[in-house]
Image (cartoon, helix red, strand yellow):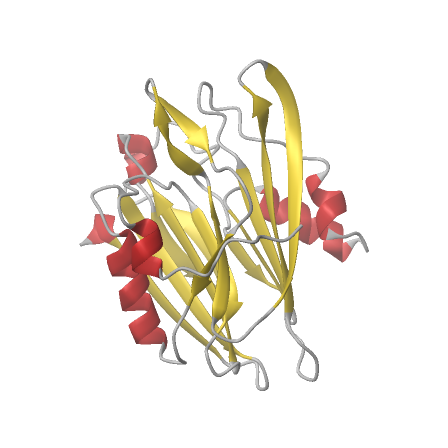
Length: 245
């Protein structure tokens, strides 16, 4: 599935969105030399705000509690958001990361893995599971997929499984996040295709700073950005954990 929405600037898109929830962005730098991956988490309750990003080894990302004694329910907040398998990178907003990685290791694919999962059981919000997979190719265009698993409607427990496939385009990225707003105190699931955003040059610090400023607010907990050199595989990573500030 493809989107016909025009490309937007990050500041333009996030303006007025106080709680987009958790979000995944994948794209290609303006010069086409670096793959760009971003992941952010937000939280309002003490349990969900008690989190931080850490690197697991040199490449993978894991979430740990800031204070382990304050964790009341780790099931939906402690997981590995990103696993780097070399030419393939998996990024998600939950423990479906491991479902996808295990399926790939057994010869399966992204879609097959997610066919076994559904939205989170956190009534009444029923938070969508969002996932991405990136294929890095030195001599061919990089490709990536984004997915959302969400509750079909207020009156149906059926799970909608939507997939979007992209060929990386220099200067463009696609963003998907969990929430689009709220109604009567209930968070509303992201609706429609991923958002196409304009991204800048190969300066990871500038991109990180711009994205942080665009989404910053009292509910932002952590932000992760990674640039991967398409030719050499060299990685650069930036992380901020607001609960440690």
